[in-house]
Amino acid sequence: MTILLTIDIIMVMNDVPISEFKAKCLGLIEQVHKTRQPLRITRHGRPVAEVIPTGPDRTRKFVGDMVGTAKIVGDIVSPVIDLEDIEAYRD
Image: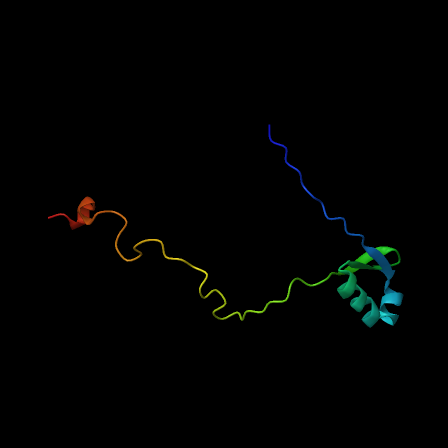
């Protein structure tokens, strides 16, 4: 018998009217950054946009950022099958 447990992360999203967001934009963005909680912007009670926290900072550059992450585990040059098994090579 296997018991599988999952942990759900509960995030509370605060609603802010668009007029308040316009007046307090920088402070609200800083709040999202510090608390890691998203913010929903509404117009007349209907959601129009969401401000979400960014992901982790990337320390690697795009070009060459996978250098050293791959491992060659076999011969990558020779064919997978024997050349004698290919009919075109016979004769």
